[in-house]
Image (cartoon, rainbow, N blue to C red; front, side):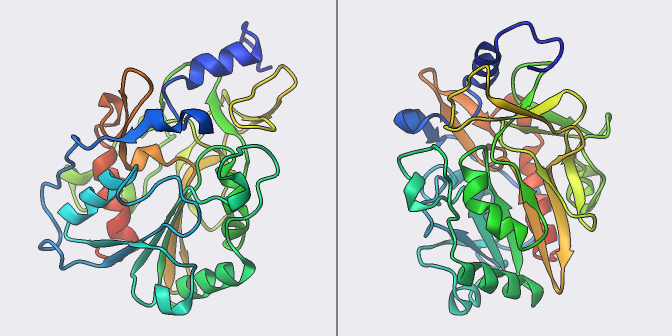
Length: 313
């Protein structure tokens, strides 16, 4: 139990997580894409449909899909001129040849489709991981997103092929409840092209995330979302089942978002998915993601990130 927290671990975790992140499998229906949220881009880089090609993985039991919980992400990119389509087959050189950016959001192994407990085997075959790694080395771009447990376990082997070490838990702030906010003012939001943009109008000063995981990035990567003191990772055997004996890992200094050049290509790794889209969650339909008031700068950050990955800027 972290110092200074006077509740039981179960009470503290429950209070902190309610309404913020992915619901248990039995309540997934309560987390839906916000079809009324319309992301805008003030100065689109390309005319609609003439930009780089983005492929969103849907072949690995993905929790987020193009027509579902990641619709707002696709709409934002399309408003910026990007061409976005879903990928319904396993990764092959032929599939990736038709894309400039591959987006993998919350993939799972079939074993965990309806059972979010340990073990959490890889969502990807070793052959697929090798294909993606070679494709990035040769100039492709990868956005790899794996939220809280069980998603890090399913994507760990893919991340490890690029030198990232995932933690199969829940990242928590022991000092406050609510969304996690990374700020330029306190250094938790890093300085990079993805936070600076192309000018003052694209500069981002704060980003909100909604639980997720913490991970270790390789030395050559730039962490753009870095956990401060007071953050821990809770590591239950089953998602949402927190006990006094649940392992707690200090993750101060770890990352929730990092970017890196790899060979001729680029990769961005993030430990939280809701920040990239817009959803309604829980019985009251609370906003979670780009539609949340605390996340007003998230859309600009997403636009900056995708432009950087595809070398638009």
